[in-house]
Image 1 (cartoon, rainbow, N blue to C red):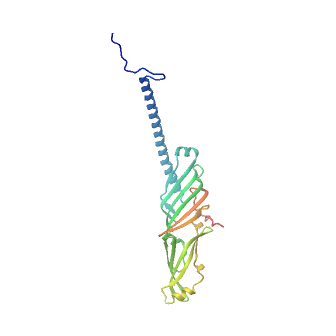
Image 2: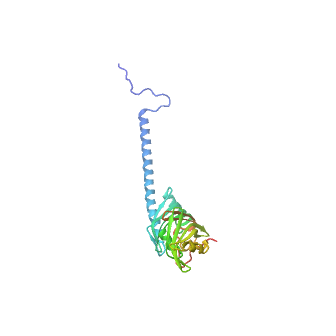
Image 3: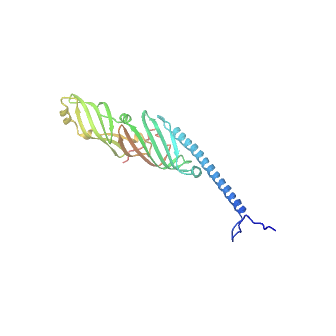
Length: 267
């Protein structure tokens, strides 16, 4: 009689037969695939909700723009997960931007980062920081410069303006080199050098000019910002002024009211 030789080696203590090991492996693979599928479904759902939320926030902000302000608004909701943020009614970080914004005839670009946005409480924001990019033509339109035919030029960390002036019956080109300062909520165009040219008496006219401080030009930013929003910094680049703003406990859709109740320059 020929003995039967088993293909399976004898099992040691604690070992499991190979068919049983294969069944266990299949169960683990199936469980892993189900878990991966559920995760992908959750991520896909979260991405879809995020896109819808971003569109709703952008539309809400755009619809809340006051009369005289117009532009296409984009929004981005940061952080994970959007589903959880909506369920809690609080978005941790939202960015709202408008690359081409027209405000009362002035062209600029704006970007705002809002932190702690209470979605169902009037879009109230715990903290807000942002920037306004103001081209020199726009700044020229809001700065009341002395003289006539005034023009303003922004360079790297510097600015200047020129205008035609008449003094003691003589006319000449007034050129003012200046720097920007932020004082009590006002942007001050603070002269560092003043001279008159274009006249045979230019040097005499320069010496006869009033004190250099008389040529400072204040711009109260409160005339252009919602109440509670303040200017925090100023940066000058070639042809562009960047204004940093900040606020706490302010609505993301805060408007500039028609009644004239604007922000106030700080005391």
